[in-house]
Image (cartoon, rainbow, N blue to C red; front, side, top):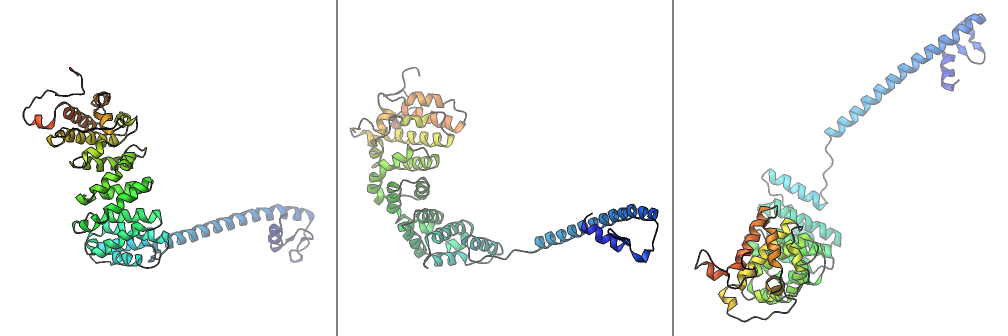
Length: 371
């Protein structure tokens, strides 16, 4: 018999070793035999009652704990950069200047380790996007401070600084100041092979009007940009193609782009199996190049290209671009279909002839007659 059961039986007047307790009298053997089952039944009932009471009490205590947890607000953290950004957003909702963006910018001037610098810059980016009034109240000195972070030894800090500058570039009054860092951004993109850094840097450049004084640097980094276009990372490819499409409209950069050396499989970028976002960008790029080379300004000069150049891959006598374009005309995505047709038209009809006639015939077409 379990020790607990023995203690209860003693309390009820029964001792497992000596029989009934003295105060019950000296009952017969038959009476003692009847007492044992009765005591056991009473024991079972009591155990059931105790179990129910214990379970109900536990449930009640659990309910109180959960209720208290729901009603209790956790302590606010004021040291984490992410918590600072959250606090700032809450205060902005109530129409107050939180001052948190200023606090974050000031904290960059204090001595911080690389991780904290990266986290602070990340929070600055969030605040700029979410707290427009506070961001607009910043100064060009703040932009200079962020630009200084591009020289940081830590790659993550560089990336977060690029993201913060991209956020500030959405505010018109800061664009000229941010443009001063364009050459540094191009240097980072061309010397550090990291997809996250490429995406951050290219997004910044694509959000800025690039001044003419950076064209010499752009010529130097053109091979690196073309390598990014041919990489296998879609986000960086898309951003690089957007930048190249913009540069293709600059008369003094068009030849440098067309004469860039490309891989033998460059036209794989035009395969229907590529993601629609990438196909659309590469088709826009091809259209800009085609229009540029058909312009009177460009056609006035006899240009020479190397055999592995982008020009030969797209517009050379042995190019298979026409076949790729015709396959894309039936692409499932309508935007891709339309853009493929635009490239075909630009190849068939030089830009200056389009203005003279509604229906034009190809002068030097890479599509065979009847295609």
